[in-house]
Length: 639
Figure 1 (tube, rainbow, N blue to C red):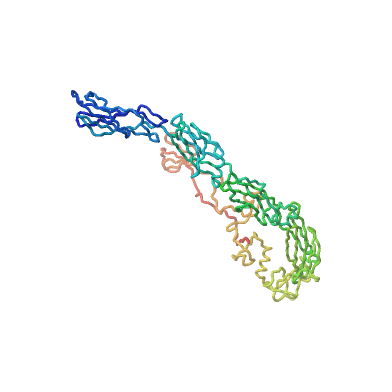
Figure 2 (cartoon, rainbow, N blue to C red):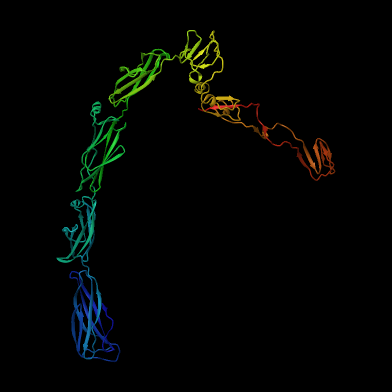
């Protein structure tokens, strides 16, 4: 209940007020039953006012009135001039503010129209609710909050501007709703969608109001159907497939690989969008199924192809297939070719082949050779060469020969070329036994100066042993065959020197000289000073100090430690004042103390200080630790 403030009249001491009392409410009718009263009184005591007239009261826009008689005395105690009880309709949302105004018209007092408003208790109207979102095909609960237990509801859903579809009617406080699978068709390109849920509230058959919310539904378990059984591959090289007998065995660097796949099946109103094919480190995207040719593939191990099928919603399924590869590489051969004794016309030739098995399907098909003199322009006919078997052929040993060897297996071929030098004996003595050729024949008719030849051997110019000396691949002896003789200064070319020095001074050899000339100018190659300031010692594997090459140690000077000093003695003496008493004599002090075996040094007999001291010598300097030596240059060949 509520009451207005005091309202004024034309009489300063007479006031009135409006009082509103809420008696009850009808939720079903959305009304409140209220009583409106108008009261009047005097503000002072001891006075009475009365007369006739009317009291007017406007309630929620409707004016009502009541008569005032002279029997209604206006004193300091309030009296009721107007009272009205009626039902007030609330707004559609259940709220209501009631406005009332009143005015008095009497012969003794009057007032202007004055108003008062009071809010009534809101009446619960349309029920609110929540829930409704979930996965398509799954159950979700709609929970309703209603104002009255007598309320029932009708639930609807709607997409955009489409028609409302009834979910259920006569619903109380909740409803378990399975989101229809027909919703899939609403979102063929997305994994979720939104709609509107609508709830109408009824009290019996009377419509109370409505309430709506948005809801979200989700696509689940809708990945495309796709499996490895839909992936296949084959070798489209019919020649290779005929050898292996299986077009699903791919031969390395020979087969022509083709990968195929059939269409995946999109689910729940989606459509297939694309396929990502990943093979051998690369990915290819296609919009439809079919075949992809990868051609020749260089792999000796099995590889996997992975295909990802993607639908219009972005959902995907990946399937894989292992592709069987058979390793193959070109046939190879290890070839041996040499003349008998490095000289004879008979030549040995052998080719040892290596063939890839290719799962037992491969074998050697051809192995042939042909040759020609190096001076000829064309080769002879091909001749079969047995595998891994040495054969003997006879060719002119006075010239060099070019050889070609070719071999093939069921998948490919290979070839080799090489030159066999002309025959040269390892060592050859002439019939007079006065000359010998090393890796060549002695030939005195073909002298070459040292600056033009790199062969080994020394030859005299003539029987007189005079004149210019030459270098050639022969060495001449005296008539007895026991002494090599030549005369004059032999001048070797740099190339010849280097050739010879490789045998005398190989890499790692040490050259000693009292000359500072770098040996590279004498023998060629690369040299570096070695062992500067050190004496070489032969390796001794049983001594850790000398157990490996080029270990260093030792020192030019050494300072002795105490343990290294020779055994020796010192003179010990007693210091008494300025006198020194060395042991070995006799001294008798005034105080009666005797020191035996002492001798007095000095003249003072002061006994106040008695200190025993030993004489010292030496400076602690290091001493020379060098053996007798002589210096020279030592060079190490490094290249």
